[in-house]
Image 1 (cartoon, rainbow, N blue to C red):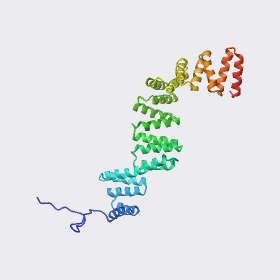
Image 2: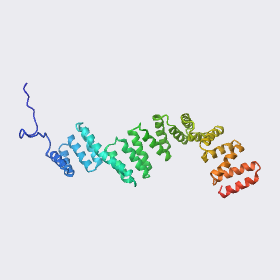
Image 3: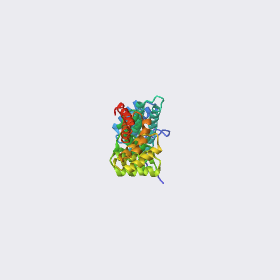
Image 4: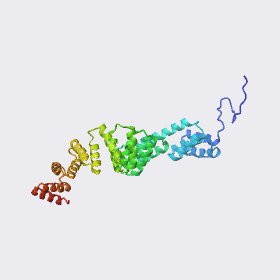
Amino acid sequence: MRLRPKFICGAVLGASMFITGCQSPALISAKLYLQEDQPEHAREQLLRAREEAPDNPEVHYLLGKVYGMEEDWKAMSESLERSLELSSRYAADITQVRRHFWTQQYNAGVTLATAPAPDYVMANQAFKAATTISPGEVAAWRNLGYTYYQLGEMDAAIQTYGVAVEHAPEDTATVASLATLCLQQSRYDLAAAALEQLVRLTPEDSEAWVNLGIVQQQLDKVEDAEYAYQRALALNPDLYTAHFGLGNLYWNQERYGDAAEHYGAAVDLHPAAPEARFNLAMTYLQQGEDRAALPLLEELTRQTPDNGAVWSHLSLIYARMDRLTDAQAAEARARELGH
């Protein structure tokens, strides 16, 4: 079979020479400069080559690599993306370049953030660079959000964790971090969305259900809050926070019997918690049960001796029981505390 001759761009100078193809002198010079580790000169030649051949994917790939060497991450990302738009020929090389520079910046951020004296400002910059280099890597977004949190930039932290969740919607650690942060900042709509996502991912997480109940209660979604608390208790009947949350929910609905049941359970589970004991006492008083409220309030005078409200209510109970001396002493203590 006879071979048909094919057109080859460039001259064959000798049998031992390689055929370079249709490469511009600027592109050839850029490659030589890169071999000699002179990125600045390589960039100049690549910019010239780009003017001559704007649709050459190799030029954009190499230009992106040079921008990475110069830590111009935005320009790097744009050049690499343009190369991929033109051709998939350099896709593997581009992935390798991104991974190299992403790892470099990410590790720098981790080192700065975990040092004995953390530098969160510089760590933030490193993680921000990593997200620009490779936007799909959730670890950099998550750590960027953490540095914003440490720097007190809560809106930026919430927004960044939100981006991380968009990139990895099934990453429970990231979703939980977003939910916790939104709850801390009283961003209840965002917290509810994150927690609903979290309980879908981890339906056996009783704490997530409790937090969802708290958020739904803040949003005045009473039925949803009750459902969330009950789900938490179905998973863990001894969960103090779920009982306390239900007690508050029922108190606000004037369902005092139900409130007393759950406040009582909370006191049994966590006797040292004055909040549940005080709320249980108030619930008994609302029901006219002075004798049930009395030992709770007397215990609170030992737990929280500077709580003027406790002494004031105790004074009223003593008075109704005709313990006038005790009533006067409790009233004096309440006034002393400014209540």
